[in-house]
Image (cartoon, rainbow, N blue to C red):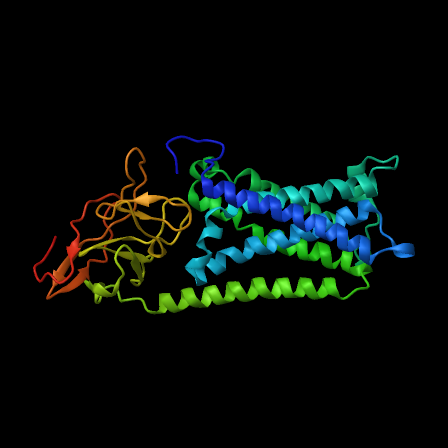
Length: 352
């Protein structure tokens, strides 16, 4: 989060993150080349160009699987939140590797004829009735176009100006991209691949992504099933069980999730959705006196839901009062940025 738009805020964590990504990609390509030279030798030797195409392709699809797994993993365990914090960097890297793969393919298979390479790509050997002749390369191009859009709109400039809902809708197309990539591989490389290792690895990847998303969805459903009815006041339970500086998530029927934060003996309640990208605030913590989103570090003051100056973001707050030592919540949301005096744990008097 910054006052103005900058290209990239190069914090130490981002530098380390990007260094690990770049090092991992280069190491993967080097290892793939080395194993490829050892595996396919003699009369079965594969040219360096083909090895590069395969290395870039498998690297890109591996990165895409990692990108799709980070989200549900972070929902299942906060230990994976550091990976989520800079996930967009990994997404841009995925696009760059996939684009290199596409360029090498375009040059190697379509760049030596009399027809324009792009024309050759979209017209060569297309037969919708034969599996091996299905336009798998066009499916790959469609996936690459989606990745290009996601990479180009990954900056907060687009998030701010498109609105969080529109931006999120655009970036949900990563799942359409994933389906296109799977079809691209299934109707392309796997049609001529004799080894069973690639189909097995692809099946494991698809199964892993699906299982993680289902597990995360079931966890969210269990949380939502514990929602309190929309009554005049909602008992938030024993707030002393909330660790200092942390929160618990509460669901009230008909409303988005609510984050109940404890700071010392004080309890404050805000809407549990970050104004930046819809991050789960209840999974964050209070840092330097501010609620800090676990996804990208956006901050809000607990008492009024306002970001510290000079930032201007605001989130919804809720009225509280104490009743016989129990913290009670008025489920009617207050306007974003409304100051609410925190309730004190164990205080029998009302706090309005």
